[in-house]
Image (cartoon, rainbow, N blue to C red; front, side, top):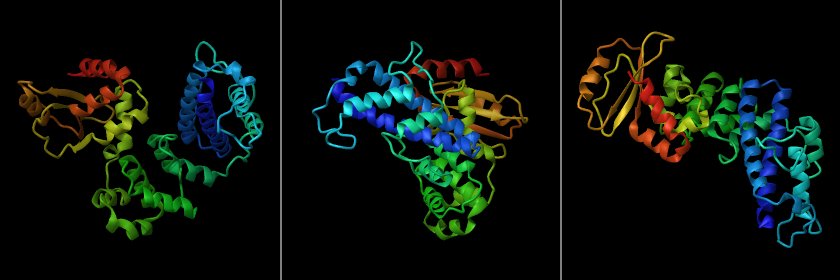
Length: 332
């Protein structure tokens, strides 16, 4: 059983070592906003590694020799023992403490130098790191972190990054399309003009490029709002609900009630807590409550279908009670 998990231990360790190199690069180039998000990704993968270690007999990795086809570099390597050494270097201790954390025995740069024995590579340059984050597998780096990387760019001098940003105007992820459009509007209007005819979201993307949108319309703003409202649930988890949350200007009419219902936040004065109305299917006074909102003076509204809330609770059952309770407590 221990041998079966060895390839996964190595793969996760490789991801952690890469993220370690990214952290070092971002710290050197003073990018604290993106570093904060990369630190979160790094913690996630370290927690995942800790979980694997808890179900693995790591002591047996010291001496076992694998007979499987899994090899790190050479046929005469002992990959199982090497994985034990890699884990020991990453964690400082192959066994996590009672709280799931690891002993931080050495500085990050010293740790990385030691790990080069198994992952021979130098700390990547800043442009390379930014491109790698933006183009990284979604299973390794989440869309929220990718969006943070795009937002932290101040120019598009690197041709490879410029091509990646133009490609993201076609992304299926709304937050990446929007952040790419914002950056393109600042730095590469010509690039947008060249591809605009082929964009599915041409009208909305064009508004973003030209700076004609209210910040509250953007998925990033919606995500930050939902994360704050739901007591700091990770922004990465809130991106998909936020992408499906509708922005309605205060000058536009509110929609009629639609089954199975929706959550409606109405924003009045700047800095004031928004008014919250939750309309469920079968609510007898739905239209009356909507009319009350229609009579108010609001700058804008957020409308989140209850079907989206239900899907979130199914996908993340550990948060379901908190989400439902927070809506009940804050309504009215």
